[in-house]
Structures are given as C-alpha cells and as structure tokens.
Amino acid sequence: MIQRCSWPKDDPLMIEYHDKEWGVPLHDNQKLFEFMVLDAFQAGLSWAIVLKKRENFRKAFDGFDVKKIARYDEKKIQSLMKDKGIIRNQLKIRATVNNARSFIKVQKKFGSFDKYIWQFTGNKRIQNKLTSLDQLPATSHESDAMSKDLKKRGFKFVGSTICYAFMQAAGMVNDHLVSCFRYEEVNAGNVR
Image (cartoon, rainbow, N blue to C red; front, side, top):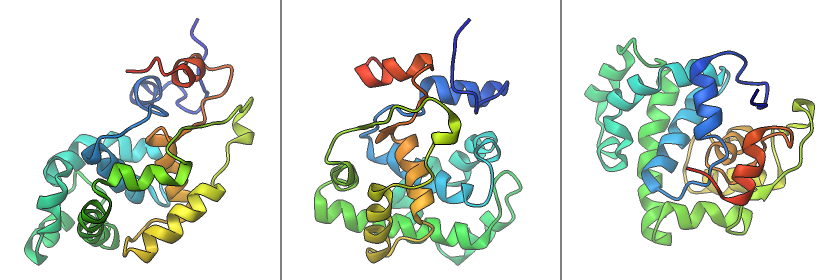
C-alpha cells in the first residue's frame, strides 16, 4: 500500500493533486500565475474547495492568461461576480486583475516571473524533513520576504501564509512527509 501525506484524506481530487503536482518545482510563468490566483482565492477557505472549482476558474479566467486578465474591465469583473462556478469574492476577483498587471510589470523588470520568484529560495528547492503534519509550517523567513516584496510591487492577497502555500504548490519547498512516497521522488527530482 502506498504511504502518502494524510492531508488529502480519501478525496480522489486531493490525492491526484498531492501525487502529481504538490511540491513539484514549477518554472512555467502561466502555471505560477495560476497557483498565485488559486492560492489567493484559498484565503480563509480550504484547498479542497478551490481545487474542486479549479476547472471553473480556468474557464472564467481565460485559462489564467495573464495578459487577458490584466485587461479585464468593470463589465468583466461584474460578470465574474455572477459566475456560480467560482468563488465570488469581489476583493479576490479585483485582486486577480490587479495581480495580473503587477505580474506583467515583474516579468518586464526581471525577464520572467519565474526568475523573480525563485530568488526567494536562492533559486533552489527548500528540502524540509517533516515527520508529522504538526510540523508543517504556515510561514517561513522566505515567505515573509516574498510577501513583503510582492506587496511593495502592488500585489494583493499575498500575505506570508498565502505565499508559503504558493511555495508548496510551486515546488519551492518540499513539505511531503519523509514517510510519504512522494518525498524521495520530489527530493531526487524524479517528478513529472
């Protein structure tokens, strides 16, 4: 029997996310933006809720196309507020449009968002050695620094806890428990 982290429980969608995406280092700018959006919408909610609506988010937000989202006007924002397939939080929807614009500015300044965001971990994955979920941190020095800098650059919904969740999703940190089958795969770089 496969041993994995216990947080996905018996939810097939959460298990698939855990087994295939969580902790895998990401360098694709569009995927990085997707996780930034999804992690912002997660604020105050469970990841399972966001994950179940992920495909709806993808449709509603034009496949997470940062250039399209940066051009959203008030009419588009109001239509998103009526979309029952997503989390209809006006502050988070407006933050997504704002963050798309800030994301583009960062890309222009640094050449890519990937190059910018990975500097917070020294351009390498942080390899934690957790033995229980109780040891799972909510923030780190790196997420604190990331949050502070993103806010300075105009991003919204980028507190340290959200940034840490983003780091986990983007594989900037490996927080799989050492007993989990994915720990060694992610650590060794044998990931898909």
